Image (tube, rainbow, N blue to C red; front, side, top):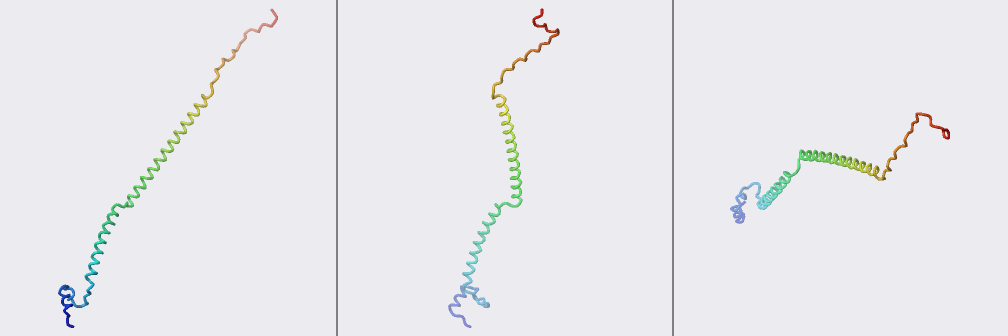
Length: 127
């Protein structure tokens, strides 16, 4: 089959067109350009994804964070228990002091003397 002038001009511009079998697809250049554009876009997206992955926490990072969190919770519990005990002791001490000193204490009366007789007591009315 003889080549037309239009096909000959197209073959001169595109050496791929002269390849023969299988037949040359004239839209191939446009499709390849789209694929190359898609590849460039995909490469940019892949770089962004890899950048994010570098910033993501690993299992080891999460395990370390969990251990630190548990340690912090334990320390917080110790502090809370210590503060609660301190406040309780202080409250009991203050209440004891106030209750012991709230009312004035009566002065202590001296005890009545004990009289010990060594001789029988004189009878009343006998000289």
